[in-house]
Image (cartoon, rainbow, N blue to C red; front, side, top):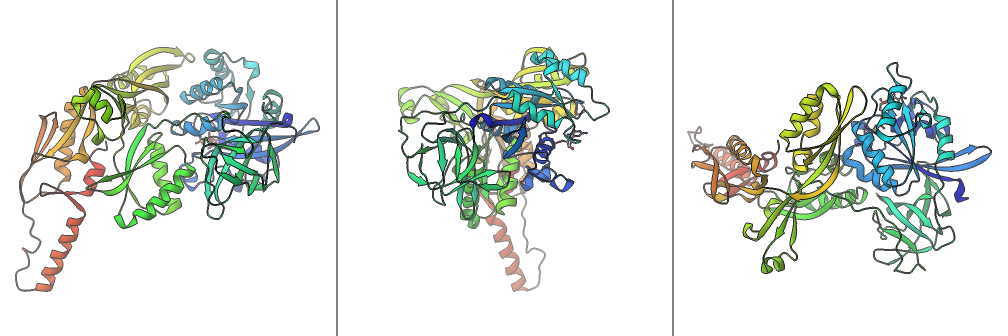
Length: 602
Ligand code: GTP
């Protein structure tokens, strides 16, 4: 295939603006799938996607389309819409030369439209601005065109209008893809070099990779190696995805294809697959590294399930390159892992997939954001192997006397809201420790507000709260703004004077009193009464901020059994002993396991 006849593109949009529906229409119009309702959203293959109605994994489809008597190969890379999955968008964009940017002609520009537009601009991609849902009676194409002009300086006559649902304008849109988006600029003559944009696990064939070929060509049977370890492998499987596998013998620069090098060969997103002959000084581009926004512990429901859960997490992490997995352990929960996620929805989807695709039962601890501290003193710097430490678990915070400065992660939040809610939104952002940036009018009724916000105030329930105070009309998206100095402290929980290390948290000083009170009250509710009185204290550096007292109570399960039924009595004592195993003991105070999982959740 001639590289001039290849177009690699993606559809980007705010959630629900119609990406999957348009992808279905494109597949139909190119004869890739048969028209009909039973094909609805063929690209959303995962069970969790069908249940939640959102796209999680990016899936690719290669389409053939004839225009002016020439056959083109159009590689459509479907991308997820939610903020948490912007990692997938970034990866697929590295293989694209253009995007179709969909905007709902009824809703108009939303926060995520702004985010995907900036991303496409930053990557020098050609943008085809496209209004969708023009069939809706309330669609207002003229208004949305003027929004596109006022925010992005997009000329109204370059904007396409379609109804993905009814198929209106879709043929013209495909032609715009061919005439406006440039072919990939690649080196067809050089040695084979490709980068991995996705991986997944196949029971029989091992790791399968979706690759974008930068230079040369690849054939079944060819000798190749990974850039990361230079180990030799042989290409065993090669296929185009339409979106089901269509085996091919050869693929050339500019193409997006699936390769497999056998069960033991491995393969990681961001790595490069190279011809055996390529020198190891070779550069080539790869996807930017992933930034984790949320960390949580995952533990098996029962320690005997540890090996099975370990295996499932490994396989799922391979398909979801956005997570990082490190071993973790706790006296209360046993051996487990600390996992880094892009956001809360990502965390939920990961555990749901673990359950559905791998049938693994797991316990999740409360999520937290990563913090950073600057270390002082030569000895401490040596001990921590540098003067900066990223803290993903409050327990691992270095000794306070070695800390020179604390930093917390911030984001730039973009909110698009009807003007009547500006007051409520401003109050919410202020409550969440936000600092306003200049705002922009989207049109007479809508405004774009931007705030610098601490990530910890955003990840938990910011989006839901924003939706509820604006009756669902405001939209929100965020971009990373890096670490900045902040007034943080570590707050500990003591039970009768003994530190319970799983319950330590890192807190902003303005939130200290509130958190101390809330946590001690919640613990009082959650811990059952004990034989002795229990003092629950929240402390910072030895100073008590809040205290609750749990009164003593003797629970004698055999008290009701007078008479001499020994077997019955034994059975009850045995049950009680088993109950104890599910508890964590701190200074003879027994705490149910779920306390550690639930107490830190809002
Ligand atoms: P995510 O994958 O969650 O980001 O959503 P999406 O952007 O893929 O949106 P999807 O294709 O799932 O469409 C969202 C809703 O809009 C669905 O109920 C579609 O049926 C509907 N829809 C999509 N395109 C059109 C259209 O042209 N007209 C009308 N009336 N409805 C549409």
